[in-house]
Image (cartoon, rainbow, N blue to C red; front, side, top):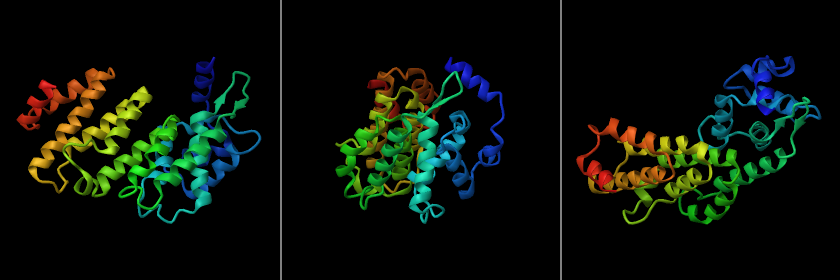
Length: 257
């Protein structure tokens, strides 16, 4: 029955009340306000129209990945972004056309708490360890774990996390969080794998060759964990394709493991 509802909506155009706003990707702040007004009303449109991956990822990126474009985003607008993400991921349309939004508020609250935790001063550096317990709690909500993937990728890509915190004998906390997401949410394993691939292929880190080798060995360990979870073909195919580019020591390490 859910499939029938989904197909019906996919084959229909968005209601005229949201058509302009929903078709703009990325949407303007005005589009977000307009969408929020309709989806926060007593008779919201179908959530299917919010489920364009580009739109959902854009909403999450704008809140959880700091940039010059969103650094001055006001809190009330942030919450509208989060509400739309919550609605897209947790509301559902019933066969009679009614919208069941009973899970939206709890999802919205989780996203707000997660955003507050990762925005805390020092969250990406000295205080990282102090927010892990909270993060693990919020991670059970799929859209929150997706937001975490974006945030973790930002930490690893856009900050000097490895240069300041990587130790050869310790698994970095961001890697452990990605592993936990892969364990809890099978449908997000591709996103986790892509994050590990990006780190393995990165040449922009200011690390000594020895430390870089240690980091890449750890990333291979994370990929091996994905194999243990059943994500076999994707990982093995990737390593085969990368064989000529990878250091021979890394290939030997992977095979032995």
